[in-house]
Picture: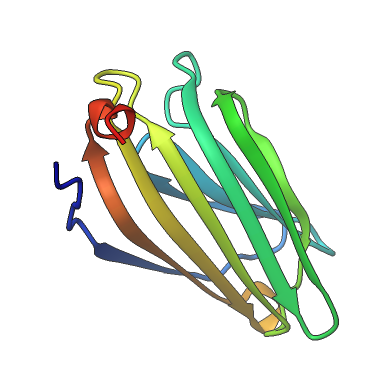
Length: 145
């Protein structure tokens, strides 16, 4: 059986994140968000509907001038907000990518996106782009492999 899907699409968002503010982008059943305090920017994910947990696999990677770091959340139910990076650099010094695979709680289908983040000007110029690798792929496709 041929299990290929072609569902690639790109969403692009721009923001100016003032101190003590937040910015959120909806990606399927997940919210990908940023919070800025006076001195730092944090990244979080949460379920769109916090009363309905979403099964997720999350992989985060960040590369800056002097370091590479990453984290993973595997096979976990997401409902409340989870901070996945507490110290994002905000002056063109860091490239940030997050891969989010999520299961739709209504029909059990899967979607996978790669989310990129680039921040300049101490939060004045934020660009988030989301590339959907696949959307709403039936759970049965993964069981047949």
